[in-house]
Length: 149
Image (cartoon, rainbow, N blue to C red):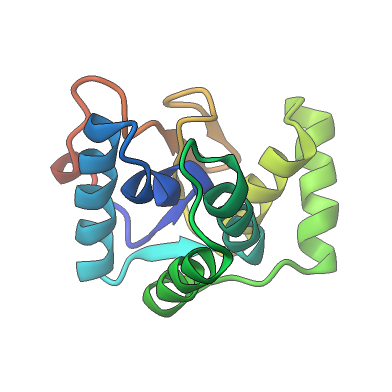
């Protein structure tokens, strides 16, 4: 078991995406469990991506005010780790050594430098471990939050 988990943008978007009802339900359960355990971590990058996705990329986007309110809601629920120069340099190392796209590497770097050993995302190789950070896709068949918290 781990003490906290870093959430990628896709996990935070699904509660607002009725076009994916199964993932919507799974994301709501995951976020609820993590919030109850005070174990949810995000970065400013995630919050910015969330705003853009909710207001522009959904089939039925939220208004700018609704998207801002959703981001503010998560900002209040989650621990937010800063993106620093050290995070940027570590992300570049992740891009070089692990061949991650820079923005994915920044998620990995933010989690790693914050001491968060678990990232929930559907955008990484499920089960991969990079320098002590494990990536889990919570939307894979058979996923159970009880296995992690």
